[in-house]
Image 1 (cartoon, rainbow, N blue to C red):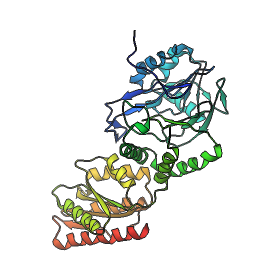
Image 2: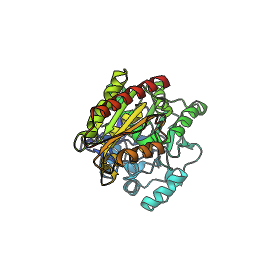
Image 3: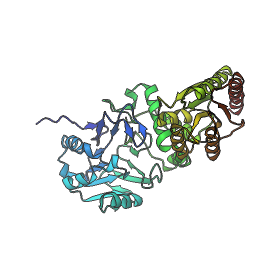
Image 4: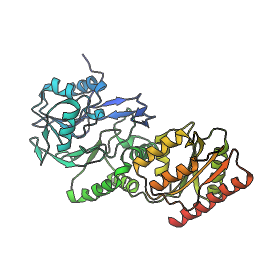
Length: 396
């Protein structure tokens, strides 16, 4: 019977055998408006090797794709570059169906797979000969889990980069150069900001090590999104730019509001920034979510957060966002806090404390109005926007 799910050849000896998840919209708190892919790869060499698997519901799709190339039982090795369930969820089913000679993972990957699924696997070390080509393994701890590693198949020059250089982007096209560059840039920057940003120092070290490793890369094959077959310098340059987190001439104003008092302050501040010729974006948490906010924060040198006080606390939507952002460790930001209150007034103070904990530069004290901001308070917010925008321009 003809297969509905076909493998796609990406090089002389490597095939894409993954799955496209068109409908996923939440990836552990990160909204994926364009879906995603779970990329798995089949190497046809003397030792036939499967690189990663897929999320468990897509096991049959992966196996059907493999079957269009070879009988899955002919697979000798399975490599698990990353034990997170979107890549390893189908691993136990694959082992049962394929019965490979060996399964390899990093040292931490072996421990993680044991904890998740109760399985024992071999630790990948040194070049692994597949016959006419070798697989080289490079541990990339905390990019973005302790078990993470990348693999390189020298015969075809394919770097299986795991989560690095990925995007949550479902599509019928396999190659990055077949997509609109603006969509690729946005999705790659969003992926970095929400998945990898906290590990930026390790990304810089990895990028610095690539020339030392002297890998003749011809394809970059991440575990999510399209693959790269050219313009590698641009891909690496983008990741270096994300990782360096140098201040950008952009601002974002993020707010929650109950009766529009905080919103008025947000708009006044943003108009001050705009008047100083700095691009500014306003994000209302009533209609936006945390991964969108973090993407904007990563792209901005000036970030302002405002919320009302409710039950002696900052508004819950703002607390959620700040907790999320803190874990991703953005650097080199000018910050500002503002808000409104009825009587107790803790909101803007608590936002300030969170920004201080993130080591944001806070040149101006927070602004907080009671009930509804006065004309004088709105002018103060506007002036704060002007002053901080000018400071940002001087920092760039």
